[in-house]
Image 1 (cartoon, rainbow, N blue to C red):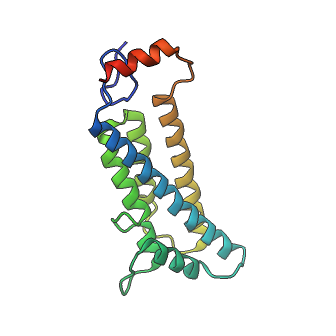
Image 2: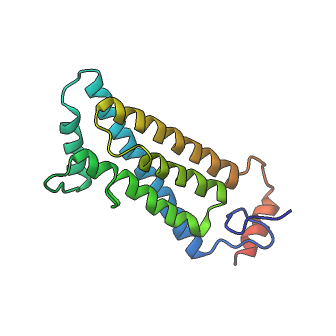
Length: 174
């Protein structure tokens, strides 16, 4: 059985180094941030579609203020939260997650992150209506849900291991 060298699954020849732990932690944080931004964008767009107050731009303005995003002249808050290449935008979070994933993640996880970025880039520019924003965020969140399933299937085992096996794995890492 050949193991993907970028997996964290422990075995007789697997080591969980500080560098791998660092990249795993940041991979998780960037994915979580991306999901949070996508959920806020979806919620704001859905409120606008349903005719709720405040408007999508007002909600996104508040979200940008909370995240510390400054919007330059000629740029919409939606563009800043959606596609700007910074850690405060959805695309920026996914790009950062992809970077951390290159150090520790199996190929399937990399594919899902790349698919989420392609989903944003291939949407034909910034969405122009709340309906388009909502549709884009639904598809982005579906891809991120698939990413979570890929992570669970790749890294987490449903088998219960004995105390002896836990001890053996602990000793191997010392």
